Length: 260
Image (tube, rainbow, N blue to C red; front, side):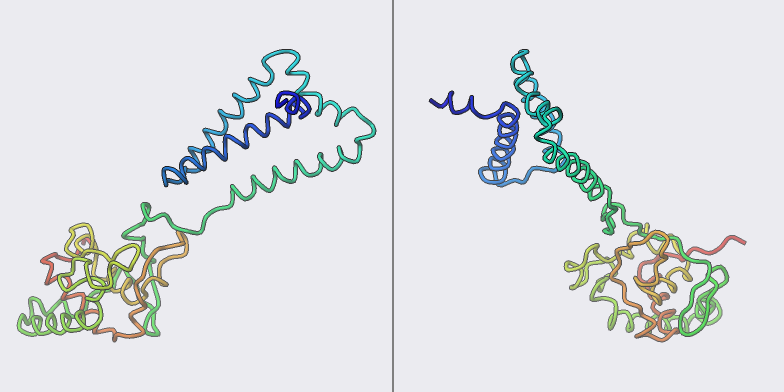
């Protein structure tokens, strides 16, 4: 009885039902029983082989091939089905085009694994109502390291106090990127102790990044992932330079300098 019922269903529809059934079964097994979602790439590859296998099975004999092709031939050759044919010929290309369009749309989310730690800086930038040239910009307090060591130590101490009041919540009291707010941020704040961070940079670069924050990153390679506030809205210019002195002093790194 079941065989008679199935024989009344067109072969092409039976094949489609088998494919849908396998898809639902695979989804139920992985998501329901195993509790794990199927990766989209794996599911696409799996269903490709399922579709090929099902249609090979249904067209294994000449009789089966004719049965599979019968609905398509009727749609194309039967004059009575002309309205249906026109609708199908209109909807199929539109559906294929819509599917292709949605798959090719670029994502605006920056992959975390491709995050650029040190984005290329602009040659000049604007902060505190004036424009700075990164190629010539220098820390105005760095000279006291040799000229007046006592004053330099006082400036470093001031920078430490400013850092603790404003920066340690994210970058940590040990400058290792493990502040109390760090677990809530993605990506986590930079670890200044790492030789791959501030040890590779000029002080002018740090001034640009701190003063302009995440919104100041160049648009050429947007979107960026950065939780850095625009600190020029909260700190004075000399306060940022003092913080920079403290960062290098505490970590023991030396800021890079342009070769002369």
